[in-house]
Image 1 (cartoon, helix red, strand yellow):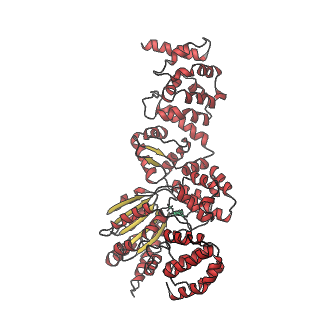
Image 2 (cartoon, protein in one colour; image 1 turned 90 degrees about the vertical axis):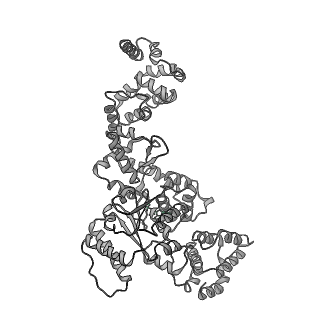
Length: 583
Ligand code: ADP
């Protein structure tokens, strides 16, 4: 520890011991990795608060400048302004970008000069993913290449990328000539040129060269200048391109160098040369970690968090972006837990708005950006997903019906969405099944709320079209979806006539009864009862128990036992006649 800092601690120790509560301060210091959990235990084992404070000061006296900084920041976070002021004058003169793995000041300077953003205010480590990125970066030690970190909007890709490079040994061993962070985002060519010009300028400045270069004036020229700089002088440098949307950006830096990029679009690097590595980022944090973010931001200890906290975390499926935006709002409005939970439930993502360093101010903008970036055709196809029933996972076959595409086109469309992290695939199941993240589905529902009826109608039309010539049978792989949800789509499309015919059709009762059992069938009649015929309901309530039987009973025979004047009987008779005709 710096002499001045040490002296300052000694002179202020009386005041510090009198006022501060070490427990809260230590939480921050642990997350900065400035002290260990064992050290915390040793301090908490002291009998009184004052003894604990004294033990913390003793510990700090044995530590380095980094820990002193972390302590100072913890005081500020816990609003001990008076105490923080006592230390302020004697703070060691280093840029505070926290990490205990690399407390070396030279390294900190390298990070901040390279433009690596600091940790977010509330931070939870994700060691598995951080290490996975580091492992891939180690592969760039010997040869140039690309590491793509991909995942859904707000899943924490940038935070992970910056955390992964906050690692002294990795940088010293693999990228001793430094790292350069470029925030890309959705930009056009002139903006891209400006970014590369700035990068060239930064690199040239570091060379202390007296030579004056005019900035490159076209993208090609910029690429050449960068190639020259990289190959001649910065071979073992890491470029980090954050939030890339367009492969033009990658082509402009396809110059045989070492690149880490974050993107929602997994396939961006397909167009460039060299070795390629990938790390997929989970869209959500574990519940505990997400709660930890809420706790850090709201300054309420984990075990005291209100019950809405868990509901919020569940509702956004642990999305780091959503949870941290809500957490920051709650810090300003600590009594609004219920309010923000309701906003989430009502899909009012516009209300989840917070100005922060994140590229998008509100949750809806972050998700909308992905949809805006699609071509018109893809956007229409994506919008059709709005009416998929929540919690349902669909197969490619089923999607080919919904999209009116053949199998190959459907597979291409699905992988386009999956690559852009706008749809998820469960590849464990055979055939693969696809699903939306709850936040994406809720966003679609809110955005398309005035078109729901027509979207449901389209779904029914596509069904009718596909099975016009060859009725659906239980052997069709996609039959499960339709059997379960066709009535739901018809009802939501206000296609009452069609719903009526469907639910009154003995074919339908037979197929649905066989596949899903009577409970689901009867549920349809309860749910859409108001638009149904009494006779069919009676038929089902009297004959429903037969539908449990295996082998499945002959539904036509059952129906033929109904009064001869009923619709049920009429249909059964028709079917029986058809059977007789077919032999
Ligand atoms: P992405 O790059 O995937 O869109 P970011 O990395 O920018 O997402 O993260 C979005 C927001 O989520 C950040 O601004 C931050 O508030 C929060 N966040 C992400 N990762 C973490 C983390 N490990 N701990 C705490 N908050 C996080």
